Image (tube, rainbow, N blue to C red; front, side, top):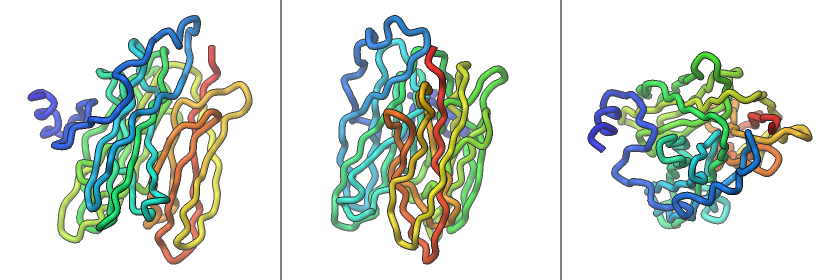
Length: 281
């Protein structure tokens, strides 16, 4: 723990979220590894337990991969629709050491609790996380930041870490085959915030695919991108195209990636969903 706290203070990413509210929810720590037997390179989704997100508060959730496997990507979902569209996904990143995916939700409702859970896309292929040094985001300001894969690796998933629950993630998507770009907005009037981008990378044949849709003013909608037949999703993300369009979820599906996105602006915006896909070997 001391080493993790020193890494946080220096702005160099520890893979495990370091926070006063440590992640508590999750599946049984590790599911049986036999689900991957016979596959050289395979990808499967594992969901964590639901956690309560208190009014005007935040909460961590976690999903664990089977023993001996690691996340290639991941995300989280919540009952944001039923709790008044007041829940936002502010952190979503892996711990390669623990073989897990961690998410943090913020609930801006003054009186309604909500529930959220993490989703890990797990693989028995090589998988690595690269978190760039955090960037400072001024009060009321936006900032864009990147992280990238090491030489010889390709992007399989997208992550981001907010050190402050009042940050809103506007974009988190693959800029190219090796780079993640994250754009965030500090909704505070007077407090400096910190944010970092996380590239999840491997050595399989990963290809990026996207699909775009239009959201009307004050509309919340599920957006998604699907893999072509024969491909499997490994990770994904969303680009909002606006400064008041926030993600409430971002998670794998059987055939691609989907996200619940809320447009809080007075005009329509174009939103893109991205899925990173691989051909199973």
